Length: 211
Picture 1 (cartoon, helix red, strand yellow):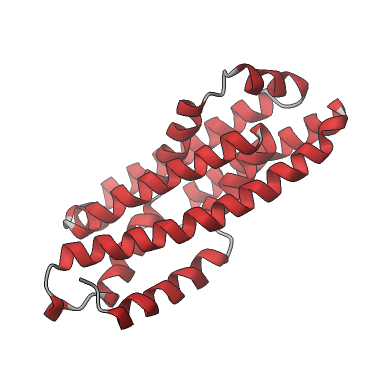
Picture 2 (cartoon, rainbow, N blue to C red; picture 1 turned 90 degrees about the vertical axis):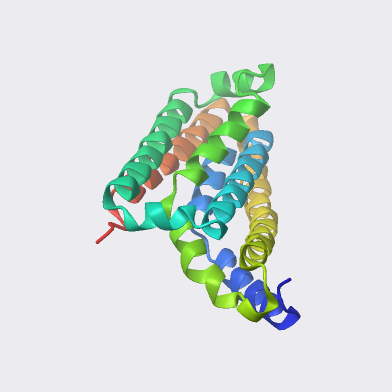
């Protein structure tokens, strides 16, 4: 089991890192602005499930294979970037009153929102690199069961991230609801959410190159 001192130190470090808005926060805000609270929160849950999977991969040593392969790393990154751009374009095209009606009728259903959040997170190589670089620093090998310790730390990180990202989603969806009285303003907000996701996808594609 993870020693208490290591666990507390990791919790403090993870909280400080998560509180700094990053790609996952921008994604959740974009989803909230484009589709509303329900889709945003389910996207957050999808992100969390993917983070658990990535943490497990790192704990079992699978993550190191992708991390060290330039081709695998690049393919993973570009796939995630392309999916983000696709989601942004879709949100932009569905902006405004029509998009709102589609969300209410269930076309942007829970499964799709959960799946989108999962795919975006699991194809983000920065999550893999972060877990691969940080988790081993807080493991005590003398305590045994290193993979289990790394999984525990990964779960702690995921729980903190879920809480923080859900907060961002609630704030952004609240702002969207405030604009709901005007179809024109709603269209503007929905379009802004779509453009935010497109911009995030482009940023992911052209940053963080593997040397």
